[in-house]
Length: 336
Ligand code: 3IO
Image 1 (cartoon, rainbow, N blue to C red):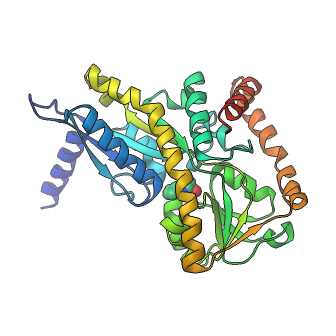
Image 2 (image 1 turned 45 degrees about the horizontal axis):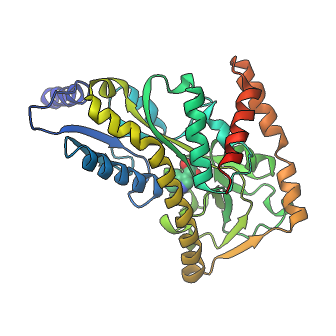
Image 3 (image 1 turned 120 degrees about the vertical axis):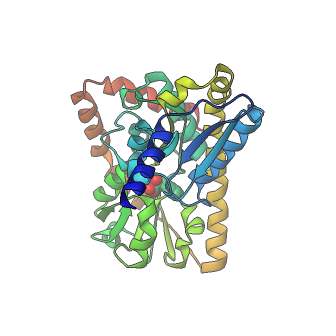
C-alpha cells in the first residue's frame, strides 16, 4: 500500500513538473497558487486575472486557482513556482526581504498614498531594472497594498503607547514598527488570525482592508493612522511553463501586466474605504489620527531605514542611489 501511494505521489509530481502538451482543441491547463483566503485582495486579483486570460485567449488557456495556501504556502511561493509545483504563484515580497532586495525598495518610507500609486510605480521600477532576483521566473504582474496603519486591541496614540507592544508585520513594514519601539513579531498574513486570536500579538501593521476581509475588527477596535510603508507583491510564472506557451497567449499575458497592477491597486484603494465603513458600523472601530507634530516625530524616526537599504544594496553591487532616485521619481509621477 505504502509503495503504491509513494508511486502515485511521484507520478503526480512528475505530471505537475512535466507539462503534458495539450491535445488539439484541449485548453492549456495552468495552476495558480496563492497564500491567503479567497476573499482577500491577492486572491480576488487572481480570479480577475484568470477570467481575463481565459476570455482573451478564447478559452485556449484554462487556469485552476488555489487560494488559502492549498497548493503553496506564503514562504514557499517563489521556490514552489521555480521548481514547478505550481505554474503560477502570487507572493508578498516582505516574507523574504533579503531575496527581493531591489523591488522591496517600494516598502521603504516613500510616502506612497495609494495602492494605485504604489502598484504602478513598482511595475515601472521592476521593468526598468529587471532585477536578478526575478531572473528565474516570468513576472506576470506586480502590485502593492495601500499604506500600512496600526490595527490594535488597545488604543495607540503616542510613541509611549506603542513601546513594547507585540504587533505583527513583515519585511519593510516590520522595520518601521521596530523603529517606533513596538515589539515587532514577524510572520506572514496567513498566520496572523491565529496569533491575534491567541493573544500572541495585540495587533498588526498593514493595509486596512484586512479589518473587514479577515474580520480583524472583531478584535482590533482601534486603528492608528500612520500611512507609512506598503507591501509589494509579485505574480510569477515558472520559466519552462512560460517558454512553452504559444506566442498569442504570451501576448495576452504581457498586455495584462500593467493593467492588472492598476486594477488591483484600484480594488485595494476602494476596499480600504469599504472596510473602514464596515468596521465602524459593525464593530465600533475607533480611528485614531495623530496630531501633525506627533506624526512628524513618527516619520522622522524612519530615516535609518533608507540608509540601511542603500548600504545593503550597494554591498550587493547595485546602483542603489540611482535606483532610489528613479523609484522616488516614479512615486512622484503616479501621485494624484
Ligand atoms: C495582505 C496579505 C494577504 C492578504 C491580505 C493582505 N492585505 C495586506 C497584505 C500585505 C501583506 O503581505 C502582509 O503580510 O501584511
